[in-house]
Length: 76
Image 1 (cartoon, rainbow, N blue to C red):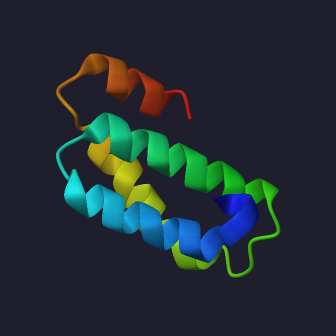
Image 2: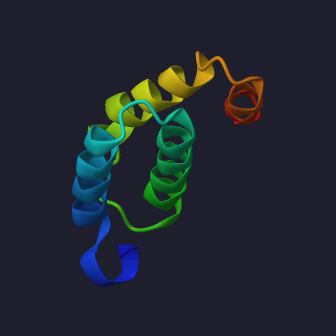
């Protein structure tokens, strides 16, 4: 999707997807990692625009009761 649609459309799709599954912190964490990595490595303009939401997703995952998810977040 990044290659075909670009970062902004992929980000918007991710927002909608997480709204469908707001309690799935594994999904939220994986989405944050994917978007964060692509934001840094691709030619994403205005990277700061996404910082607040991506960091909020990391924060949600960090406070998950599943220690595996917490561990993944702490490794970042």
